[in-house]
Length: 85
Image (cartoon, rainbow, N blue to C red):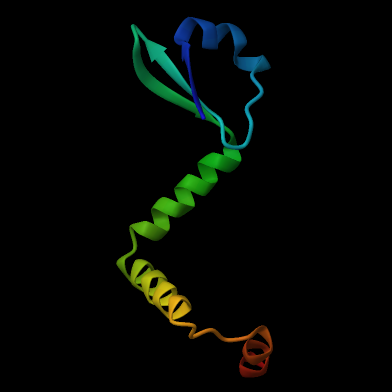
């Protein structure tokens, strides 16, 4: 969920803001969104997602895994443990 807040209101309330994990504050100046405030956990999650999606090899592996899962080509936990020793 995104809530808009003016720069002046953000300055006044910055140290007392309490954001939920999925909440973001869009800081506005003259009605235009100029900054985003979010929890560090949300920032890290978004950053990691961008890193994965910017790597063509990882995206290819992700698509391959999704196709295999859709086709029922799954490996049990026990099989993985045996294979890895």
